[in-house]
Image 1 (tube, rainbow, N blue to C red):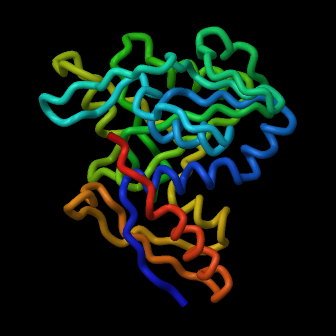
Image 2: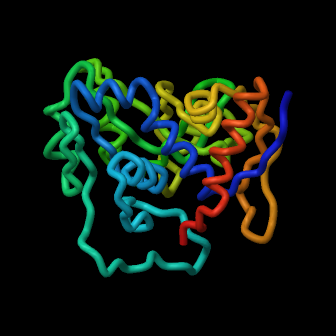
Length: 245
């Protein structure tokens, strides 16, 4: 049995966050080690799901993609840093520069992405920093110290080009603007979230819409009657998710 559903960007972020927090990798690191959640809009939802507290999600990012002429809104609340969860203890005001060297084997880093080649298991992260930004720090620690890296990213980030080719193109000296870092580990999308939470197999079948569904993804969900019932119940609780303005 199967059915199809369209999810807005915000709904997808909420779904992904619920799946991340329920995943074996996250639960193991939560119980036995440290989790570093690097600032990003999808990761803002992860912070909410992990802590049970609301945060100003729009400000939990180092950079934002906004329409031409739009400006990042100012927050009236306290500034948030990266989030470190150390054996269940949450610090909302950490900084990757201060804590990255404390992570070791069995710990987990969460970092969002800007581009996706899902079938190839590769994500791309735009970088405006000349020393490779937070993903450079995360990769150096993950590769060198056997720290796990998870990349929560919505299927709306799927691109038509090959991320490795795009990354090479953006590295050219004549290019002015952001570079891109390819990442090949721990991709976690709506598909993984639905598998973790409900046991269903999801397929990305279409994208887009209007009236608030710009950037939406269409997913076809396949599973048993019980699994699909669980998915319907889960999604019913996500449909009211407001847009991230």
